[in-house]
Each structure stands twice: as structure tokens, then as C-alpha cells.
Image 1 (cartoon, rainbow, N blue to C red):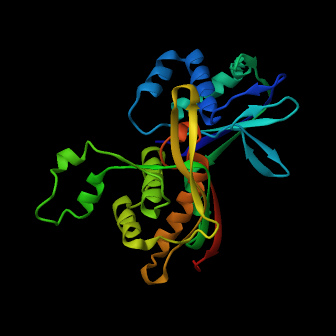
Image 2 (tube, one colour):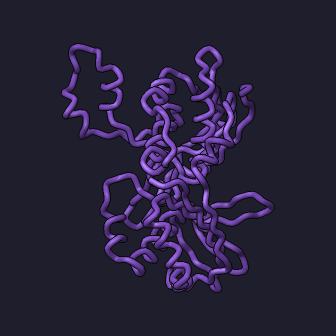
Length: 301
């Protein structure tokens, strides 16, 4: 656990047109693993093979046009500035990234045999405690799910929530082995996922079980998605039909006053600010679950 995490933005350009024909988050992740492997092959293998919560996340490749983000899904063209962002949560990996930048390893990377030309690096450290101190009890907020998002959930969780049921339909040990891909903006699944990441890497703690119980009691609820949400397929390789499906769109959430706990509402604000850097749901390392958090109204502190 650390008191800070690192956010690394890499701006680059290319000299020749590149046709990707796939979700560019897979390319961001490939480049990240490549530079880690060049600097520390053992750590790269550990990251790749680990079943634990990943200590980094990435964005797809994107451009900013009039401050509006455009995510690359098909091609890259010369004379544009592209960005990849990485959030690094473990101290060991933060130290290694600093070494990689100093050794200029990123500048040797390629996309489809074209060497990327690094323009600059932008690095900042964010303190977990400062995130909490700068948060307020949220009442209404929007979450813009910018890239395909899905949650990986086990029926075991639901069985444990209702564990007072005397006769379980299926044994709990059996349910532990089953997972479902859930491409909907369920507030409980969203926030539970962020809590897992925070708990794993942050040095600032709160009563996780009580907070999650409050969320599960509809302490945070969906109030609408007027523009609609839609599921999208993001291809890794079209030739082998490998893809991931998730939802995108803007979802409005609400913290009802009849279940209001101001401390938990403040923690919700903190977690969603954190999630803008870490992504949410499955596939965080390949740019899935990238969000924009938009607070609309706060309760009085």
C-alpha cells in the first residue's frame, strides 16, 4: 500500500499512416508490457500472469480536438498528437516507470512496425488522503462511460448477501467458480469494483464492509440515462474474432436523502474521482471502463 499513485501521460506522433482495425486500448497495454519487459522481465511476467487486481490501468490511444477526446479505433495519421495515459498504483512499478523514462525505453516502441516519436511525458503524483480531503457529500452526479464497460460478477456475492436463506439452491463452493459478464451500469457493482482497487493499493482506509452494505441498500441509485446506453464490441483481433463487449453512455446517479449518510456520500465522491484515473470493471489494463465523473449537486457538509 502507498500514500500516492502515479499518472503518466505520453504524447507522441507517427510519421506514416497506421491502420489498426482494433480497439487501441490493446495497443496501449501491449506497449506498456513491452517496456516493462525490457526493463525487468521477471516483473513483466509476474504482471502478465497474475490473477490479482492489476496495479496499473491504461487508456486507449486518443487525441484531443477542441478539448474533446476522440478515441482511436481504426487508424492513426501523421501530423496529429496522440496520447496514452497510464495510472500506476504500486510503488515498485512507479519506481520502475521512472527508470524506464530515464532510459528512454518508450521512444523505441513501435505500432505496426512504425516507431512512435515521443513528444513529451507528463507525470503527476496524487495523494490518496488529499482525494478524501477534497471530496464532499455528493447528491447527484453523472458518469460518462467513455469506453466499453462491463463488470465481472459471481453469483457467490449475491448468495452471501442473502446468506440468511436456509436452503441454498446451489452450494456456495460451486458458486465461487462461476462468473458472469454484466454490461450494465449497476451502482453497486460499479462502486464495489472501485472499492476493491482502493482497498488493495491505498493507505487511507474506511469501514469497507459498512460502506458496501450501504451502497447495496440503494444508498446510491440510478436516476436515469436519457440519452441511452448502448453496448459495443471492441475487437482485439478481427481475424480470430476475439472481442470484448461493454456498454457506453452517460448515466445519472442519485444519493437519496432518506438513506443519506454524509460520510459515505463523501467517500462516494472520493472513489469516483479516483476511478477517473483507474478505470472501472473488467479490462482496465486495456482501456476498458474509462469514465468521466461529473458532480452535479452536493449535500451540505
